Length: 252
Image (tube, rainbow, N blue to C red; front, side):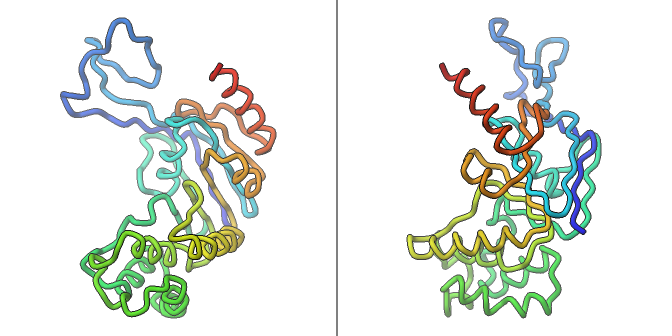
């Protein structure tokens, strides 16, 4: 059974460059996320602070919050891309993350070779990769280009192949930063339908987005992040109402 939990997860991004650690202006209001030395130099930024939650099989969890609230960073920690400084993440089930679908592409290798490499990196067996290869090839519509190096592809062709690979294997835990789409109008319609089917197969979905419509249609729970910490948790519609109300007040 798919399961995800975070227990007191905290993360600090240290600043090493001298250009990044100059003293703060005395007129600037202090931001509690900044870690300062005694002389006022910025040593680091608190990206996440004491994040705790759990998601069980069947849960569809939305992450909401302003830009810089920690949504993508939390997804990266849950995906194992960035280890937390404190706390721990527990995952039961195979995790599929679609935070950056271009990550791991080998441009000197052929499209078919990239299908194999990306499948293996995702924890799939070679037999499973071969079972899905024809589906990936047909969906990408790349034909003989799959025997060519990726470096010969246009940006649109790379996106189509990446999308086809990323959505080819049934996810147990799906970690998603915004909704994926790709290509021209005809391909985009096909991709939208495939994406909806792909998400529906996930045991647990964790989705970050600014789109209320997208989150309400696909999620039943929500976490409201603010400055790297959990502001509130609850029903996705109710939490978005509170978030929208506060955002509207702040923009006046």
